[in-house]
Structure formats: C-alpha cells, structure tokens
Length: 204
Image 1 (cartoon, rainbow, N blue to C red):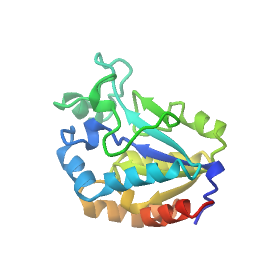
Image 2: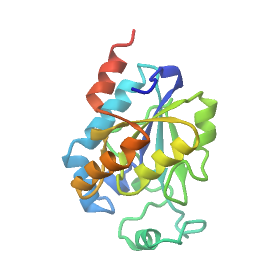
Image 3: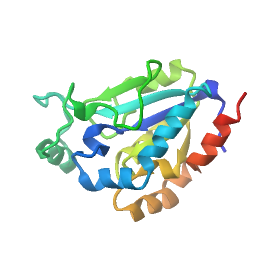
C-alpha cells in the first residue's frame, strides 16, 4: 500500500454531483450504476471517515457556463453533453455534490469548465501541493473517462495514487473491472473501501 499518512494524503471525489450520479442525472445508466452498486454510499463513507482521521477531502466538480463560454468542444463527448436534457450549469443543483456524500466546511471544492480531468488546467495541483499532498485517493466517476484521466494526470505530476476499486464506477460494470486490471493497476495502488476505512478508523 502506498503511504497513507493523513498529513500527506488527500481524498478526491470526482464528479459525484447531482447532474452526473444523482437520481435525475444526465447519464441515467451511469447514475444507476453508481447508486445501485453502492459506489456512492462507499464514497460517502470514505468522506465521513477521512475527516476525523485528518485526511483532507477535495470534491472535483465539472460544470459549464450557461453560454458555454470556455467549454471544450474538441471531442464528440463534449458536443453530446451540451445537448443533454440535464446540463451541468454553474450555480445549478446539477453541480452540487450528490447525497449521501456530504460537503463539510473544511472540504475544498474544485470546479472545472473544460477538459476531462480535474487536474488539467485547474487549481487542483497547486492546492494539493500547498496541502503537502503526496498520496491522492481517487474515487467517483467515471471509469470510462474522468477517473483514468485523473489517475494518469496525478501520476504524471508525481503523486502516488490509491484507488479503492469499489468506490469508482463506469458503464458497463464489466468495463470498470477491465480498465482497473489492465490499465490503472499498472500505475496506481488498488485497494477497497473497507481497507481504507479500517486504516483510518484505527488511527489514534
């Protein structure tokens, strides 16, 4: 297991927002997988356990301005997202962190208007370095796009990455298992929610 000293560890939730994993999310199949698999509940449990253990929590949210200014348009995914009935508009309920995950006053929320990763062109890397982060625990969605991008970006930036495999989701579910086994396991330490909860609860 990578070093999990609370002083140098940050727990990151990726796109755990109403417009993505909520009951009326823009991508119903992904939202259903995140909720029905228990993934969102496990993310909530990790968030709740991290704070008393001294681990900083950061929530990464994807959003866009109502006028679309500055939003990426150089891939089919971005163009399709702009046409979805649920849009991740700045200031709307769609970009609020979804229950049962709770946001505390001491949490940081990083919002991005473009791209595929919360580490590309945002404040996140600078915030992590100012926090003294060396190990990034990545949770959330999706295993198809944002989670792999986050992991690869974090590794390229010099962070150790830990992935609780049951606290991420993608579609179909079988794809998540394959991308974990054949790609992410090569660059990140794979673990489980229960293992992290046990480690954090055992700390004095």
